[in-house]
View 1 (tube, rainbow, N blue to C red):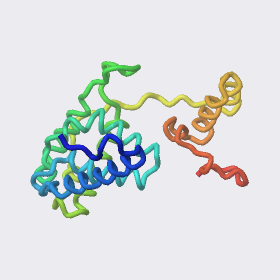
View 2 (view 1 turned 45 degrees about the vertical axis):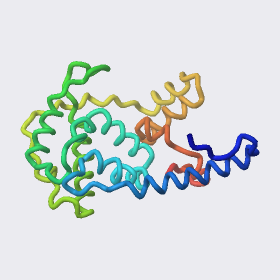
View 3 (view 1 turned 180 degrees about the vertical axis):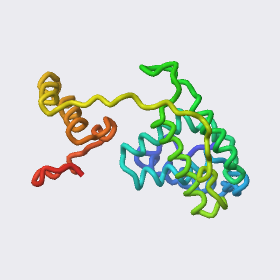
View 4 (view 1 turned 180 degrees about the horizontal axis):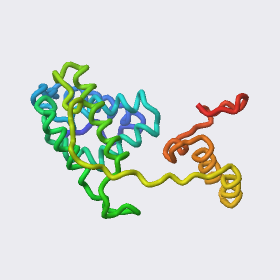
Length: 212
């Protein structure tokens, strides 16, 4: 067995030696890492290594969260072993058609096919992933650019609207202050719940009465 120091070494000194040793180990592992070539890289590898970190850095918190949720629910399994370089327009079309036929497992839409908005957002994410890969020179064309699924999509449910008086009544009826604020953001500023949940004090301009 390999020991970092003797048993009588002071705790602080032992922690320093441990940190120093971990730096060496990390460098050794980094040197042994060999990046996959374009034909070896899967779509999932590209998502994890290059695409999603860029989303987190450049998109809003709520957008990054939505992308990650949809990736986990509908896209990851499909792209886990698919070659980034060899993925074709035919593959993209077939995948979008399979998404459109996919049934919702739970919730109020259980048993129904995925809605137009969900399939559309999944397509947007896929298009964006391959657009980024094309810009990086890893592929020659975006397979989702000409994908043409021939499936009728389920229309979204009718949107329920409230007038200002009804919104005020709902806010007054909600007991918790944080829940009041969440509902107010969603109803008065047209935010999605995930967007409203991500609002920080730094996003609010009290002088102008604006949320950025």
